Length: 249
Length: 232
Image (tube, rainbow over all chains, first blue to last red):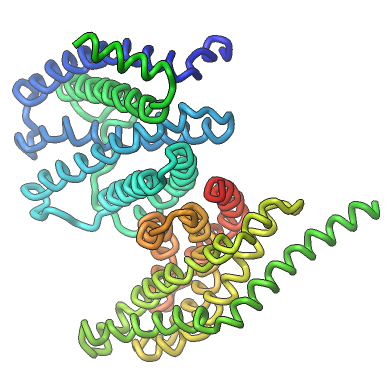
């Protein structure tokens, strides 16, 4: 496996590799999101209690799951950069952080928009809401720390350590907050095997989720490539790339 | 065998040396000890002024106020943990020394707790009187502070170690560290509230103790790694 992975430690190779992957991610995510969102928003049956307002979950739940998943991915990248000294892993963690922060914000905003008609309030100090808010704070901390360093290699390492500390703390925070107060409904979708919702609602959700995941991949590729360019701006291959581009246009 | 014994002694000696050095420096700059304490007292006195002097309300929110004030006071004092050592270069010498970084970092954190955490615990009952805390909650308040403030020092040290090389690290530090303090805050105030109802609070104490031992064993590694990044 190492032999297979080895060439991608080279920034130039992974830059071009991500360049090839990115359009596919974009096309597939567009396809999935188009099918999933139209199905979810127009054709899926309305909930018998919540009416049409439950449809926001087709965006809310994928955003919430991805906000947590991206933090985990960031921590894995940070760990591999710390253990194997992979510089590109730093770059990928830096590329992922703002995406995760945006998903956390989307989850919070859509949740508030749903909470107003359903619970009668924009915000309650419920366990899941609070831990999602704290997750957003952790993301903002990582981003702020990354921006505070001028040397981007150092910034990546420092932000990586913070992400690792955060990922150890995240379950502790989650359970402490859960214990503190809970009102949110239990997990509906993540129970693998037997989801406690009708399949006519479940399938559009799954397609939306895959679509948002692919969109994450596409944006991550784009950000990863910019990050590589920014870090290697003095290298000859980046210069040649820039020269080729100016001559081409 | 003798070699091993010697090495053990030298670890302990290094630990004691760093603690002693930090305490000596702190005692020569008494402001550093007194100012966070004054901040703690002033923040706590602000709350009755803002909320109103009614004893029932105050005794209801006293645990939260004392703990939040303790959190902020610790945050205020954290800056000193590595900053002056980083400025005069002794931090780099520590990193270069043959002793494991874990021990040196732990010694610095212990010294920091002795300077800031311990006075805070001593003054806390007095503030609890001002806030009309329930009588049966005093033991819980002291125990949670005793177990919880070391966690604040340990987790805070990670944040300081990450920001020590940055010019305007102060505001950033609060953004990094405060979310990590939330579990301690939750369990500590919950223990004090439970004690006010004369119910057993050993469960919450056990969790704070678990947080303490967990951070005691893991945080110095993170601090060491962060210091290596910060000093480059």
